Image (cartoon, rainbow, N blue to C red; front, side, top):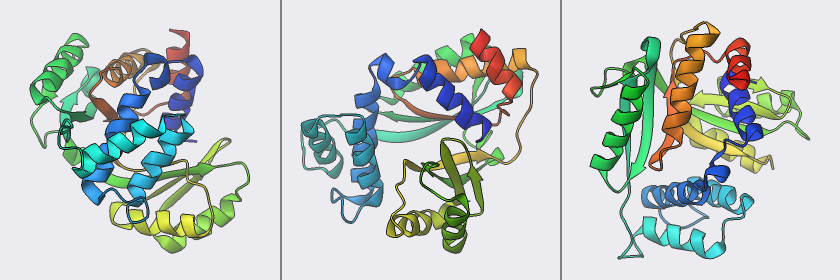
Length: 251
């Protein structure tokens, strides 16, 4: 399992996940709304929306909340708040590059919150393109390790255009070029493989490895950013080493 996935698992175990902060339903609703806006409100023809709805259902999100989010995104709810997805760029401590994905109805509020958190951590916001050139947009898909043969998943993924499959104790991670995203997802779906997570994300072309103490400073900044209501995802080029993760747990 990759370092970032280990860290994500630990955060859930420590209770730092969105559910504890009371933000889970809000973020799920925005994810559904964005998916519906991009591909329409039909679960049959919009696979991204179907995955977002499945994720919401698995987290016990009420049916009426899901339906309201779909209507908001598809435009059926004329009185609904219009959200937009924006990618901001910045630097954390020690020059670590950050891409911060925001879904918001108020750009001014979002950038103000981001600048406050990043500046307090001795980082800085950056102009568009200053950081993003260090990243490549990739498809990221996970399936449960239990009940799935890694060799079979590799075969399905490779045939559909995936370029990396990483088996782990709890999940199998699949990476693919962004243009092969739908092909890989559909191949897994048609093979009856349950997908637990599926998204396009920004992967660093080269990672920065820091000693545990400075790495923890960056990881704490990422956690603070993730706690902001408008932030959906934070990507960085930090190498999440076992030593850094252990130091964060002990902090």
